[in-house]
Image (cartoon, rainbow, N blue to C red; front, top):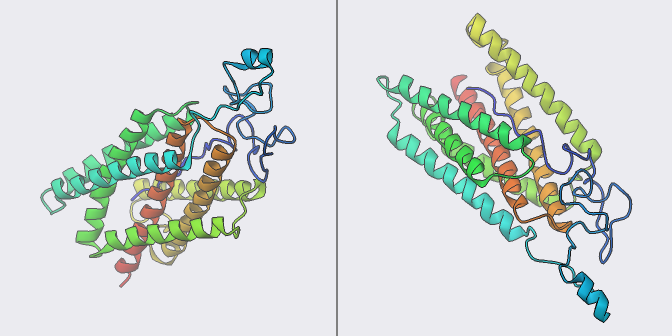
Length: 302
């Protein structure tokens, strides 16, 4: 099973403005202090010369004429409810297609090749869609939902193979493990135990790049040399790299939470909620796959 890579291009720290959004706080009632305070203030198509890039008021001239104060515009901005609803939509579609793939694509000896081929094909298309969305300036709900549906097909097939042929109950264990990591990171982030700043993001990105390169080299050796390649996905090394993969996924979850928090604080447009949902979905898929692979390795060593 191949490694799943979370999206490297995250809105607010890796595109257009460096690390602008981290370790800063918005100023209530006025513009943020410094040029690096607002992750949407640099290289952002919505940004304006004024302190608040979203404070455009169509009645501003009329208000000035009659001496009335300008009321800030509050409609059309991203809220936590928007993020929750979009994330529920993407994860819900992923779960439905995964369940359908599990039920409709048998993995017995006569059909496993065809089912696995369909799953891999769906994963490749989903990967392409993920990269396309990562480099788009604006979210595409149709593209994000299509990604989630295709990723669900892949996860359904792979989960069925592991659950039925390697370790019974592995899929449910991986789901529970993913949920536990999500809840644990959320609690730690809200409690302030995890501080997402430039140093944290830089370390996570560097570690993830090294991890992905090692997995790619291992995959090449496995394809052209046969066997388990360099052994990074089997035995003791496989267990160690599985744990590292889960830890990296947890770090990306913390970055996702920071992205959502900054977006809401700085008045990001409502459509940005789709990007938040996309990022969380990709990260949870990463964590789930690492759990599933780790469970498979542990059971194969018994």
